[in-house]
Length: 310
Ligand SMILES: NC(=O)c1ccc[n+]([C@@H]2O[C@H](COP(=O)([O-])OP(=O)(O)OC[C@H]3O[C@@H](n4cnc5c(N)ncnc54)[C@H](O)[C@@H]3O)[C@@H](O)[C@H]2O)c1
Image (cartoon, rainbow, N blue to C red):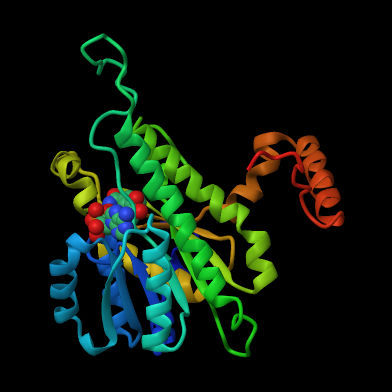
């Protein structure tokens, strides 16, 4: 166990879920479904936001909840802006406000992105549309979710006792890239980038934006690899383990923190990275960077280029 394991095993945070309203994207299956169940079991209103094809499983899931009357399925593709506007609007109409958004929906490529041997009849390399879709859903879809969540939370975030939170589900693949699943790994590194780069706005609006980085978890995404990994003695997470970590992060997580969930281990990734920075880079480089960041924040933030073509 890590030195952090004691605080991660205290379940008292569950009482804080009561009365909250949460949107879980990709909430009809796997980690999202387990997360939705944790929130519903402990008294939260839950909106399951998932693709239309998941309607049946979402409705079965809701029926199995202890408080089905406090749950709702809203079909949405997180890449579709109109559908996302509808999701957030309908949640507010139904439950009055949004306290937490779990940006969980994500996919993995079905064929190897860097297999450069798939050619057409002329011998030209085929474009990797599958990889593009992974990057679209995981990065653009999560960005849509993050921006809309912030937009709906910001008017209330500084009210007394309001705690507005957004949990971004990245992956150990957001920190390490050894599996070679290139589109997925790149997209999950992007989520860690979103977590870090969103902290300026998180502070400005008073919203806690945190991350969860699960290791191998038994769901659809890992179904093919699962049997072999388990036979080799790997202890996978259950979706419930990750759901609990997400729920904990939503009420207890300090903005900017990210929790690794790996079998029996829990580790806060971002603060620990800052701590080892001098060993990693050397104190001279750390000091150099800190001076630069002081200058940037002292001048009101990063100066965006004025000649941008977008
Ligand atoms: N299972 C793991 O080992 C593991 C490890 C690390 C991170 N994760 C991350 O956890 C998250 C959940 O994954 P999972 O393992 O539960 O997978 P899953 O396939 O079981 O569930 C993903 C859900 O997202 C939904 N979804 C897919 N595309 C969508 C879209 N465009 N709009 C709305 N919903 C969409 C799916 O319908 C599904 O219900 C993903 O972001 C994944 O990258 C999983």
